[in-house]
Length: 180
Length: 301
Picture 1 (cartoon, rainbow over the protein chains, first blue to last red):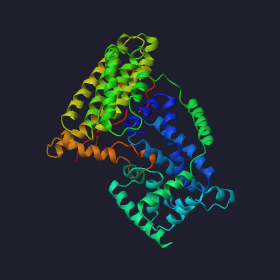
Picture 2 (cartoon, one colour):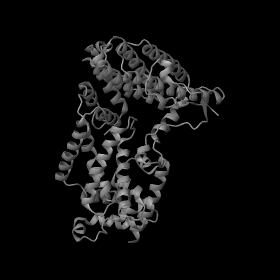
Picture 3 (cartoon, each protein chain N blue to C red):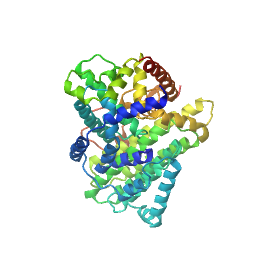
Picture 4 (cartoon, one colour):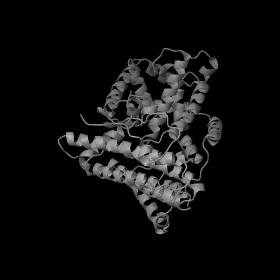
């Protein structure tokens, strides 16, 4: 969804046009679900949090008159905060960057059956990266397919820092995969 | 492992974690039913939806979007609707067209200076409408129309306040002059008390005057800052880099709620003697018990 279209949709939502919100939902639901899915232990939790992400997005759009420059980055940032809140409520003392390798560790056998081999493989490799931010930036770039600008928005870094971090992260990941 | 192979691995993993279509549809229905309860459905101008559909779905280039929007505006103008809508007031049939045209114009403003000027233009138009409503409308609908119009003025003033610290040059001075004129016009309109004007309406007008004063303070701070920087006036070209940085790096390391925070000056404040706006407007409030708020002005360092 391009920025001009997103702007129009936001204006329409603030005027009470529900169709506009449906368009945003259709555009981002799968991305948000995937984003959360890689960061929580189960599919059901991913579904619940995905639902909450859109409710929170709607409230943010309705209750703020300020211009939203990057809607997609905002959506991802809301999803990221929800995942952090989820772990905080569970009482897990864990950084948001650490949660990327929680997938597959749930003791529920049924959940394990749901998880396909490639997902497990990727998480196994990502787990070995020393810097948790490396894991996050790789997932945002290659799984969520966000632009450098959007990743910078979500991680609160400059675009240049994101590029540098990704380059280093990929180098380390390739070494890890080569060794195995 | 080459980048391509890594990418392929991620692509495959992504396909494996697609959400179930039934769940997607059910969640959509659930959220929309919640939305229906929370947002009272209003009539969104057809032109707003039409203008949006002129933008291609997977747009790669901004000029194409601009062309589409301009084409849309030309088409709309050719029917004379916008011209016919120019003098309408809240509640008139063509009033939504007027507002839509202004919103499209705002969205077509690409620089912060253009946005600030367009927003200021919207304030001027709303104030003009407010004057007509206060002077000529009958009592039944007047209160509602005043409330609607003052809300729009506040929204546009918020945009002006956000943009002024970013832009510089003559534009800021122009806005300062216009704000002074707006304030006088509203005070004058309030001063010509029409029989039966409700206190609530008078409060709305007083609030708008306060908002204009706040906007003037922000403008004053921006002008002072410009002067303190050796009198260099920032032109449009100098501002472009700042605008790009502001637009591209707007979120900071703060929670989602603060992503779109306007730039806040942290210059020292000077406390001026308290001014009671209502007293200045000649409005009597029987229930006044509290002191008026002190009037704070930000000055440059």
